[in-house]
Image 1 (cartoon, rainbow, N blue to C red):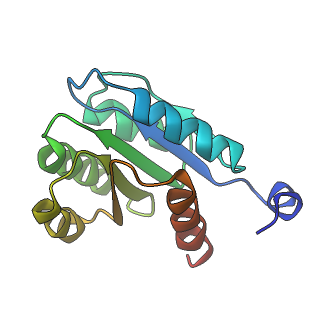
Image 2: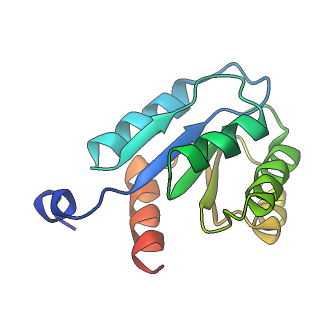
Length: 139
């Protein structure tokens, strides 16, 4: 999709969130800036957000996608809490993606709980933006 056409349509809104105690946000910044530069509207929550704060912000900001950036090793429990929070708020239409240091063996578990896609460290931002665009346009 070219930039002019995307600007004429409603911009896809993405919430980039850093749940839990993880204090490393460089990757989240790279993704947030990259998605913004690709034409998305990006909201960044900052460090050490609770899963409840992330769900509430996603609903208040009327986002299409939540991108969780997790390096702490707590990706399974944090992702599950966000997905459960969205269900309790009747906001299951919000797509959840996860990025960061994710062991390969945990990717099927994340997808089984409702994560739409997992992007491991080093994934080009273009792959993330392409996935988001394709996912939103198919809904």
